Length: 95
Image 1 (cartoon, rainbow, N blue to C red):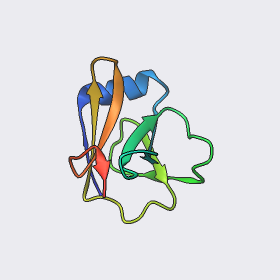
Image 2 (image 1 turned 90 degrees about the vertical axis):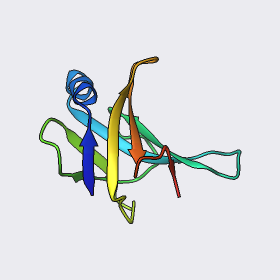
Image 3 (image 1 turned 45 degrees about the horizontal axis):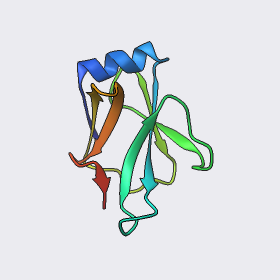
């Protein structure tokens, strides 16, 4: 998996402890659309996370059972509200 990380996102991740967790959230509406969610801590109820290598500026973790991994995981900073967002192969949803 190739990581594409903006400098501004990496800076915010470091400011908030140097760890980023990325997981899939399945919506209850809209046919169960699955989107990516990020956080500084592992969420409860997702299971175990594994560390992914690819960027030396911070630690990245994804669910252990997440397979297959995307070709590319994009991590960028959203300005309003200021938060880190992840994109799976360039999209906010996961097939």
